Image (cartoon, rainbow, N blue to C red; front, side, top):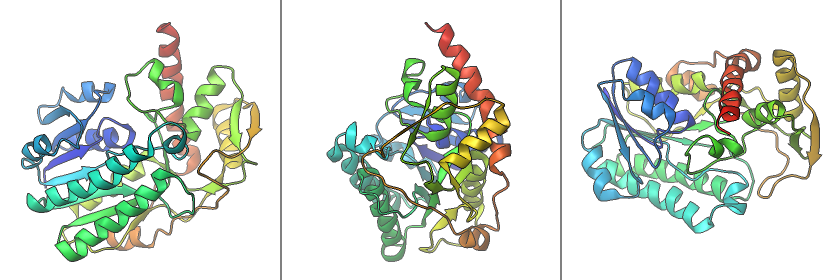
Length: 315
């Protein structure tokens, strides 16, 4: 299990997993539409390969994937509201559901030893992203149970940390897709002298997971010797935070007072209270989250401060 291919590996979570594995002397391949700064940095590793392509090119992907033991399928069109307001719903369904189904079939055909796929918490939001992720989870369970593919889904909350993109990131990066994520948006808007935008009353709650805990969870799944079952692994602690809690913690860590503006909820979402039961994380991976919100934010802030200064220099 020393040869890992990551689709969508130029992005936030994928690049952190890739870097971690490269530092442990794994052979790592990344398939992505864009060459991020992290991908350029990874080229110093002799066991790294980058394939600039759409993973939906199955003929090309087959020639690549046959050289790897394990697939981490991160590639998808993301965005709670963006998959309604910005991206075509048919493209979202084609990429996320049909594309993942083809990936699962190809992995079965090539006898890939392990397949890992991230999914999202179960909420009743009606947006293409959530709908497709729920379908992906069921398809993975189907392929595990009925077709014998060793595939596992890891259910992620709101992941944060260095490298997560914000809406204006396209001004300084060549990323093909950008999304409005709460923590980078709050930091970058504050640095630019803007009011931060809060949807609804800010009392909606979710789990906020620092990226290092996510990387460890994927790594432990790679190391696991026992064959996967259809169980879903929640990457969480059972503790959630409201948007207001995030703001207060960020102000405490940073020493800045964030200026707020409240607007109505975005399309495709409504007020929810999300918690992730960590039982399977402990049972199957013998792991519990190491990073609390305060310490995670302390490690996250310097990246965005640096990006802000770099963006100023680019104009």
